[in-house]
Structure formats: structure tokens, C-alpha cells
Image (cartoon, rainbow, N blue to C red; front, side, top):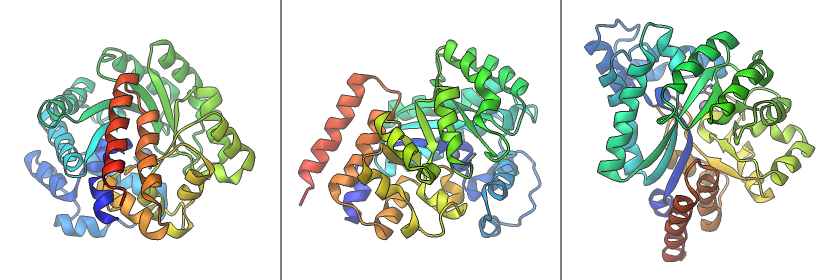
Length: 336
Ligand code: ADE
Ligand code: ZN
């Protein structure tokens, strides 16, 4: 089964590129950019990756992002993630980036986009890995700041497929950004939002009804309301679930208590994703292996996770069909 999981074609829909910054690259960038770090080695930094909740993670995540300065840094960050995608048979990925983390430090929006986008173009040319870019607003910042960021994104409409909403969920509900998201949809962006990770099930409802989202990022707190679970099934609303993240940020006490496999079997369109792989102990394969170890699935169920991700992605109908054929073929060849 381990071989089946490793070679299974995968699609990732929830990865923060800043969250793929491994301690070794972080140290290399700090040296290159003459930035002092409060840790003496990548190992000692990794030792500090023990989180009590979402906020304690975010504090370290934003600190790590401060080592990203030049276009080349954003390129190197993205390329390192792409190499993992290649190793793990990720055929398509939709990548979040947090421009405000960088523009608030005086880095140009264009610098961030240029570095990430060039790596994604090279990924397509060299490895045939396809991708889309999603810009997230930091929900702990103001509506006004989000509007300014949306204006910058509009200049890069050709490179950014959707806008999302991340950072501290508690105290910053979806309604704070209804007007920004309405404007984003008018500009032709798809929308997604983190909801029901640490926050209540109501945030999932509000993200759908007030923000017009095509997918819910996380959404695992939906099981607090049976009615909401039925509504999500009926609406075929995808959830981009991040199992290792949920354990590391204590959304669930252990993987065996995670609700993802239950939700899958109920018919919800759930997907498996890595969120911030450098901080939570792994990429797509490690997430799938960890879920399967605690909550064994059939090959068909594992393949269904990729099919769900393909159906939930922002690619053309023709490409969805092409990717689904790859998965069906893989399943047929490796069923026994
Ligand atoms: N930013 C990066 N990872 C995040 C997460 N899991 N939740 C909210 N914001 C994030
Ligand atoms: Zn996330």
C-alpha cells in the first residue's frame, strides 16, 4: 500500500508557499540576505516547531518569511517545493501566497509574483507539472489593506486565478471581507477561504454565502453541525483538508480521531493537502501515509481523494478529464 500511495498521481489544492520553506533553505537565505536568526542551526529551528495552536505556528511562520527578500529567493522557495512535487507524483498544484507578509516589509508585490511565477513556468516546461496561483489576504489585517492588495493582484490577473483568506481565524470572521471578495469576483477571480479550522462551523456557512467561495480550506469543524455536513454534500462543496497540519495545530488530538475518512465515506468532496509542509512534517505523500496508517483506506478511496482534488481544481474541463484518465489508468494497473 505504501508503494501505491507513493506512486499515486496527486493533486494539491492547499499549500502556502511560505509554509514550504524548510529550515535549511531558510538558513541559506538568511545568510545570503545578511539576516540574523535567533537559532544557531536548522536543527535547532526545527526543534522549535512545536505548536499549541494556530497562532503559535503563525508567529514562527511569519518570522521565517522575513528571510525572503529578492525575486531569486521566491524562485528558490517555489522551486524547492516543485522538486518535492516531482518526487511525489504531484501532477497539478494550486499554490497560496501571502503578499501582505512581504509588502508590509517593503518588498514589492511584483518581486514576489515574478519569482514564484517563473518557478511555476519552469515546472511546467521541465517537469510537465501544471499549477495555478492563489493570492491570500491576511484576515488579521484590515479590509482597507485587503482592497489595496486586490488592486495589486488585478495587475497580475493573467497569473493569479483566485483569491483566498488565511491567517488567524478566531476574531476575524468571513464577513469582514465580504466587500473585498465581491470586488474580487467582479474582477473575475475565483474565491476560496480558510474556514472551520479553529473557528466555528458558522464560518463555513458564511464563507459560502458571503464570500461566494468555490472551496473551503480546512472546513473540518463542519461536523459540529449535522445539517451543515448535509448541506456541503448537497452543494458538492469541496474541503481542502490538511491532516498533519490539523494534528500539529491540535485541531484533533490524534490522527485516529480525525474526521476526514468519515467525511469521505459520507460522500463529502474531501481532498488531502499539506498546508505548510516544512512546519508540519511532510508533503502530500507523508499526509496520505499518516492518514492511511491511522485510518486505513481502500485503493479506490485513496484514488478518490485525487479525483476529488481534480474535480475541485481551477483547471479546464478538458484537463480535468485528462488527469482523471491518468488516475483511472493507475488504479486499473495497480488494483491487485
Ligand atoms: N497560513 C498558513 N497556514 C495557515 C493555516 N493553516 N491556517 C491559517 N492561515 C495559515
Ligand atoms: Zn492553510
